[in-house]
Image (cartoon, rainbow, N blue to C red; front, side, top):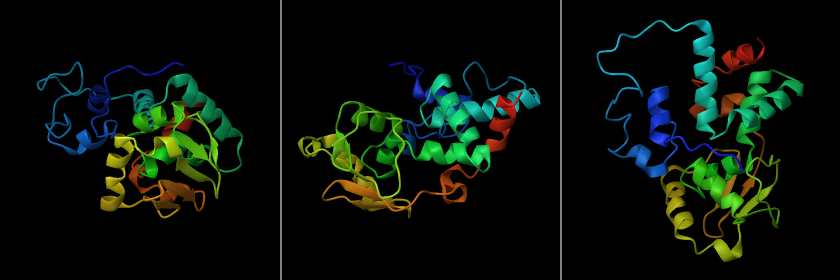
Length: 211
């Protein structure tokens, strides 16, 4: 399976914002964004060039793709699917990305990052409605019950990740029982519900792929 092996902190520096790719480290003093380190290949004295329209569109796509930990081919498949759905393509794309199983595992606080969530799914630690699903891109549905396999509940990384549930909770369309290590998707979110992506301009991605 193809995977992105680019250093994660380098990706955040390239986008000039936290993408929360490394869990707790992103909230610590070790985060390079907190240290205001320059983007890769840029020094503090480098002149900031005006970016073209194409460059702005490409940057927006790269940022969203990196945030969900996807490669170009995978991302384009999701875009094509969003394009075939009724409604606005950009909004459909965001909602489809949110419905990925690895993202739901991350949103339910079973993992500290989407990368960690993807590993949990791939290694067979996650069940959907009582059946093991090891496909990170699996599209979840309303009323799906996502849980940690009984044999995997002793994993320390899951127990540590669930501490974030106590601190921050989860989105209102999710319901989590941290003691039983399972959660339910109470409803499919709409674009405006995903508040941590409100600054993403998905229409720029649609314009990029329309060229």
